[in-house]
Amino acid sequence: QVQLVESGGGLVQAGGSLRLSCAASGSVFEIHVMGWYRQAPGKQRELVAAITSDGDTNYADSIRGRFTISRDNAKNTVYLQMVSLKPEDTAVYYCAADLPHISRDILGDWELAGGRDYWGQGTQVTVSS
Image 1 (cartoon, rainbow, N blue to C red):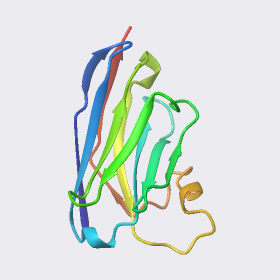
Image 2 (image 1 turned 120 degrees about the horizontal axis):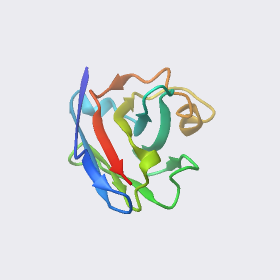
Image 3 (image 1 turned 90 degrees about the vertical axis):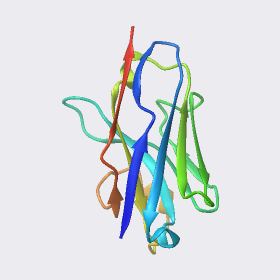
C-alpha cells in the first residue's frame, strides 16, 4: 500500500506562484509514475502533469510553460511548481501514483484519471482575479 499526502495549496492572486508537494509513504519502492490531476467544481478531473521514475514527463496543454513537475526519488516526493497562475487554475489538486504497468504509452495512459492505483486527499488551490 502507498499513502499520498499533498501540501502547499492555498489562495493566491492571479499572476502569483505556488508549489505543491506530494509525499509518498508505505511501499514507495513500487511506485513508477506520479503526477497531478485537478478538478474544478462541476468539471471532470483532468490531468495536469505526470512524471516517471526516470524523469519523463507529460503536461496538459493548458498549463504547459507555466507549471513544472519534478520528483525527488530519494524523498519519495513529487512537486508541482506553478507560476503565472490564472483564475481558471482554481481547483482541487490531487496527487496520484501508479505501480508499474505493461503499457505501450505509460504517460499517455495518464490522460484519463481512471485507473490510477493511489490517490491523495487533494489540496485546494484558489486563484483570485
